[in-house]
Length: 193
Image (cartoon, rainbow, N blue to C red):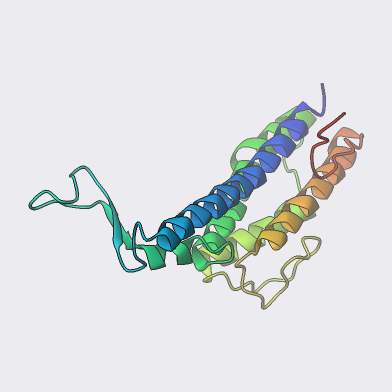
């Protein structure tokens, strides 16, 4: 099947995006549960939640991680800096998948030394901005129009969704250019086919 590699990359990109959405869902549920604990008086906003090997009340107990409930709630904000940083890392990881696994596989399948993609070229620019320029995009963009030159890449949930949607368009372009066939990838998965 000539489009199998592109299909695997599409599935991995959708899975990456989906994992972020699942994390957001779990975060929302956990935020609600913490809110219920605070409302019921079981704990207080300045009490600490500690995670580690030792029981927290043992003498000399050491926590691997400790946070107040107020700090925990701040982390659970869907648009917190932590969540934006996680989304930025997903962009970096998506480019790593392309560069290290799928681009070489497509090159081999198509008998081409060099496989070029405007979408993944822009993703490289996003990645470089995130890793090397504190998120500040200092290059012009061709097709991934979510962020432009001068923007800081700290994706909201909607911006991440749009990046991944545009990457699927880029995969369709790769299909046409290198396989002579449009795979017809569309955003999302039908629930009731």
